[in-house]
Image (cartoon, rainbow, N blue to C red):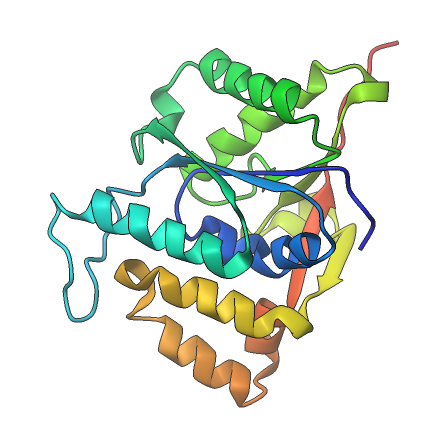
Amino acid sequence: MRSERHVLVIFPHPDDEAFAAAGTIRAHVVAGTPVTYACLTLGEMGRNLGNPPVATRESLPHIRRKELQAASKVMGISDVRMMGFRDKTLEFEPLEVLKNLVLQLVAELSPSLVISFYPGYAVHPDHDTTGRAVADALQEIPIPDRPTFHAVAFSNNHEANIGKADVVHDVSRYADVKLNALRAHASQLAWTLPDLEAAYYAGVPEAVQRIAYERFWTFPFTEGD
């Protein structure tokens, strides 16, 4: 994993960061690289309320805020920004608003690496919208100043269209960190995480790949003549 000046992580929901990049984030933190996480919503429309239920529809935003803070502490992120957009509505926000938000963060932090979703290959409308805003914002930055964009893709057909990942991080040494970050998001993951954990510790290949390896695509910007 290459050395970075500053890593900016932008995802729409609490728990996106844990699934997609917790091991990578932890590796950068251990290396002494500043990491900022901008989480666009609090995931207040999440389907799950815990198992057994620990939240109501009204209390879920507050619980997910605390879960995000707990997961960030596990990963070692000290700069967590909760951007205040509403869950499951990002596709209806003016893209210019989201793009300008990204540009403001980049101007403030001067990251050498931005991590977000690959637009069009991230299943959820909030995911795709976030990735599109990041891609459009970084496209406007001149090449010498533009941070690298490592995009997360996981749709059913993404490899057929964009190929295999350009970057694969073996984060097995941080597997416990990743699992603890996922555990922190208990309101959403208490139903499914125990099975994933059991499969991982049993050495089931699919679970090992999901926990111990994180895959990113270097986003292909379009340059003018």
